[in-house]
Length: 175
Image 1 (cartoon, rainbow, N blue to C red):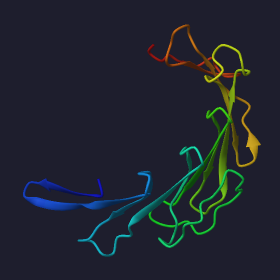
Image 2 (image 1 turned 120 degrees about the vertical axis):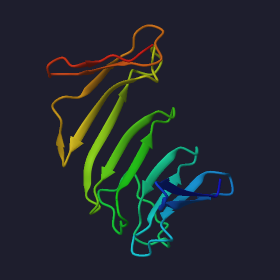
Image 3 (image 1 turned 60 degrees about the vertical axis):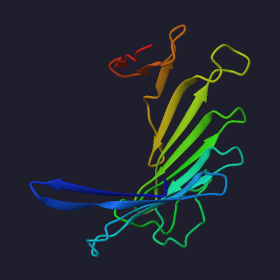
Image 4 (image 1 turned 180 degrees about the vertical axis):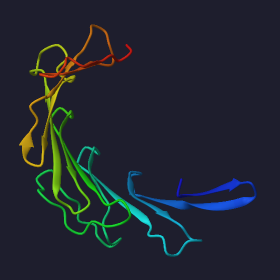
């Protein structure tokens, strides 16, 4: 799909919900998405860029102030310059050699690093080595004291998430 136009017809009034345009790489990966409102020229478009690593895993998504910006933030970034649009943000993703997500960095509208999530897995060669064991979040440079730990019931495809050192809140996930 290259573009999609959305309107809403309520009681005879047609509202422009925007036209979304998609851009793809030669190999078919989504590289950009833009939501624009042609009938509302004063409304800023929402433009997002996507970047991938050598294994085609999503490495970064961000909202540059200019469509000409093609420099993606990396997992080593501590800030991101030149964000823009109505909902400016950036995210970077890192992976282990086995392809498991190891880190997510979330940047706020100013480009400052807001949250880093570190994903931890069971030791290589053990049962469940690709099942996330815990996620530790660091917010504005301060590690949380309550890392999320996941318990994988036998033969379950979804974990039970436990928030450690809290009121033992448990989210039950269907198997």
